[in-house]
Every structure is written in C-alpha cells, then in structure tokens.
Length: 222
Image 1 (cartoon, rainbow, N blue to C red):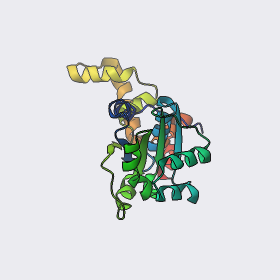
Image 2 (cartoon, helix red, strand yellow):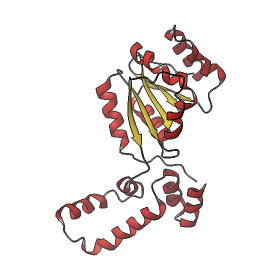
Image 3 (cartoon, one colour):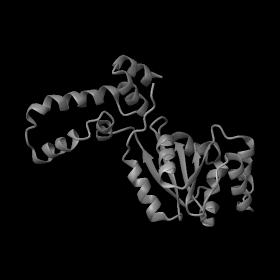
C-alpha cells in the first residue's frame, strides 16, 4: 500500500513558529499516537531547512542517548550527532528533531541550553500521555512552544480525497445559507465517508488505496 503524505493545517502554524521564533524557542508537537506527528515534522524539516538530523528515540542507540548526560561542551554534542547521522549541520539553517522525546527525558531537559546556544532550531514530538508522565526527574524547559496535533478534520479529509475544490463551495453555502442544489447529495456522501473512515491518516490512506471500507476498518482496529 502506497504511503501518502497528506496536507495538514498544522504545517502553517509550524511555519509561523519558525519565522517568528528565529531560534528563541523549540517547538513541541504533542498529540495522540498515530495522528501523523512524525510524518508532518519530517516533511517540514526536509522542506524548510537546509539539513536536518532526525533522532527517533524509539530507535536511538545508547551512544546517542548518553550524549545528553553531559552538556558542558555543545560543540562536541553537535559533532557527534553529525558523525552518527552522517548529516552536516549549518548554523541557523538546520534543525534537530527529537522524535518521541518522552523516551529520552534528558534530551527534553537539554532544550533550555540548546535553545540558548542558538545555532540550530529544535522540534520535538511526543505522545500526549507519555510526555506528561516522563517528567518526574527533569526540569521542564520554558523555552518550548507547544502545538497539539489532532486527527484530520473534515477539511483536511476533503483535501486528501481530492475534494479540495468542493469544500470552499460548502463553506460558501453554509455562510450564506444558500441551497447547494444538486451537489448536496455528493457533499452528504463525503460527510458520511468521513464519519465512517475518521481522521487517522493510516485509515484515510487505506481508503484511498483500496476503496474498501472493510479493509479500512481492519486498519483502524490495528
């Protein structure tokens, strides 16, 4: 099954953060599991920066995790990360992503000093429950700007299924209280589809790939 990257509204808010923050804060994207946090952040990092180091703490080795035990020499930390991930960092043009940061609380605590250093941007992702549980022994950085990510709403769903031109007409009809005429039935069909499929990206992707609601239900249950 082809994996698609869907357009998400949160992307613009992330872009607003990048332009307004200019490295003075890190960005924390938190939300339920499987709503598309990692996919969106990876897409943003690839498109909006000259280079990016993506640290997935579900997969990170002990060597990577232990780097955050000692922050006395940040140049050494950055050098090691570049060596491990084989990515060159460029001052004020690169981003370091802490994916599933709740798995490495010391990396989250390090944000205070990394942001103060100012060389690079930082984006964190974390699952809602775990990110609040794994903070017992660390100082939560005040240098985080938080954005919460949700499943796809109906407009994002419409973009995904190729109905991006119909949705503005739906908004126009709603705001002006005009009848939609012959297109009403088609719009109701799409709304029912959204109610059946929901907004989890994997389920939407499964529908587009298979056009099979039974398969979509299996994906949601998984």
